[in-house]
Length: 430
Image 1 (cartoon, one colour):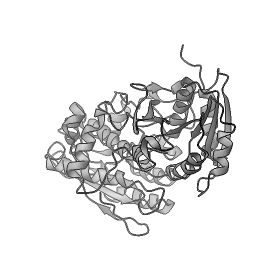
Image 2 (image 1 turned 60 degrees about the horizontal axis):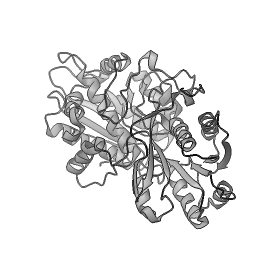
Image 3 (image 1 turned 60 degrees about the vertical axis):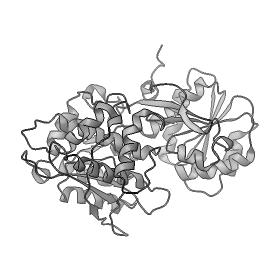
Image 4 (image 1 turned 180 degrees about the horizontal axis):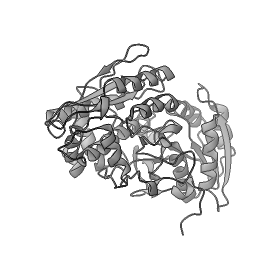
């Protein structure tokens, strides 16, 4: 994985490519055809004769807890894979990666570089500064496909095409998972932020029409000691007591230590994929660690699913020796985002240049895009929008229920669970 960028913005950019492996079945075969077909009108245009197509992926690097190195590493691998197999529709693909530095300046600089490089799309990227980068992309008419979902504009901008439901869908889904698990009380440990405030209502909506008591425990986003919050959540450790951590990956890891020391006998631990994943289960002791039996709600199938066979093959063959954690939901989001791009480019008239506008037209058509089982078919048509003012672009309201069993994160329930009714505060389905 190549991360390009100066120690401080403006970040540097590097070129890359991609093509998928056989296990993604029909989906994998289409990916090469898609990327070669992308280029943007105006500054981001490539003619139909086979001019190079430019795409960008960005994420923070060298910042600590916010780092998502696997996302740009995978984009690089995808680029190499594609070009090794003839590019997209015979056109060479240039995938640029950018270090966003987890700063407002870094996010803006990456967006500026996407514009200056004539990128036809920004794909599978991570940044919490959507209010900074999205206006830049909107002005240039560049679609933002499959962002990690860290900022509100990703779910509201008409040029954003999210492939996951963000933290709201995960918390809503976790609430339903814990309701079905028989919890009598759910203590939500969540960030003491504005975004964290909204999570309480999603959990409450998931538990409505039940006798479950929801306890809101506000915790700092960064701390080396979460003991007070853990003790409060565990309480008297009665049967039916459940603890849901909706903190980030690093704070959740810091929370696991006091949870292990407390050694609750009856309390059920739950979290969301992203706060922990298979690599965290492994590093904390597997089946003998604090995550034994823990519930997890994710956007996508479990890492052990055959859905990810093509991702594993691409990372292994074209990762150039870089370790890419395929259980990382950021990496999985990037993979799905490039699958969407591949599918969208495949629907553009092969005799015409691939432009950002052409991509937008395909994505806005409302025709479903198949992601080879990683998500339900995705559509950003008007009828698919979520009827909320804050996040109308949140079209994927499905989650997966997983659990740690024998040291592995596996499906607790097969397939997807739709929590759209929770997110819209509607009545539960009959």
